[in-house]
Length: 330
Ligand code: TXA
Ligand code: MG
Image (tube, protein in one colour):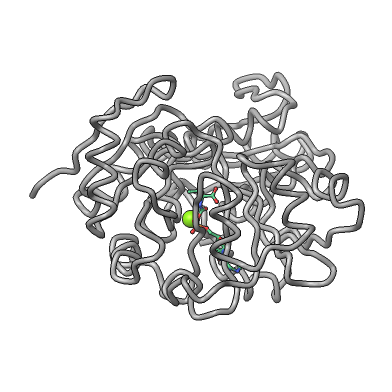
């Protein structure tokens, strides 16, 4: 079997020859995996329905789950959807960045991208390799996370190769993703505006810019899940069984219990714990390391991982959402 080609690109000076090779593949309707600031994306020409079908085949993704379209400037976004004053405010403040806007689609967008719905999700990613690739191809790129459906999202090029293997001809390696969890998805077609998927940018961040309230269900609400169908339970699970606790005391008791059963248990908390790992009190650090750790724990052969994320404000919504999903009983 042919292996995917992995090409390293220095984010500060992406090699134009490699970008040209990737752009040509995209223009020919092929797939290219590329880094963004959140997670690696599996890109295809968003205006080519056949190319987009390849994404669903490579991921084993149900066709009912719509794709995010990545562009390099606001003008291109307005070509794809019906732009609104709220979209403009958010885009001017947060783009390029980890925020996806759901808006009414224009007819140029194929049904594969929208899963047949009347809205389309768009964002400008904040990664120099992603932006250079979009510009070199001269195309909007539909790109879900570059993993098989229901597997953990990739934050390193090696994760993409582990998950997709030869299903993707070219992987651009731009190093580790700085945010580490997927973008905040916000539906601007609903009233009130609603966060469909929490992420690095919180409800408060958006409210400050919009000067009005934004609804949030932390991804737990049924209607939000139906409208953002990627939000299935256990969407982000590693293979290693995972438990989480608010209380460190409870977590320590549970660890003792499992150790007595003969299990090899890893405990990760936001503070110093005997025989535990301290990830500290910053949500950005937890986000950056969570998926990478999911991949590593699976490789290291722990029987169980116990997480005690520091309990605090809305900044933690994205991280807690991913932890809660990953810990759903299997
Ligand atoms: O950070 C990210 O968003 C990454 C990088 C590659 O940009 N992409 C990503 O894509 O996470 P994916 O396909 O794994 O997740 C896209 C999410 C899904 O929950 C999907 O249901 C939702 O966005 N979505 C896409 N289009 C939508 C639409 N028109 N309406 C509602 N939700 C939509
Ligand atoms: Mg995904």
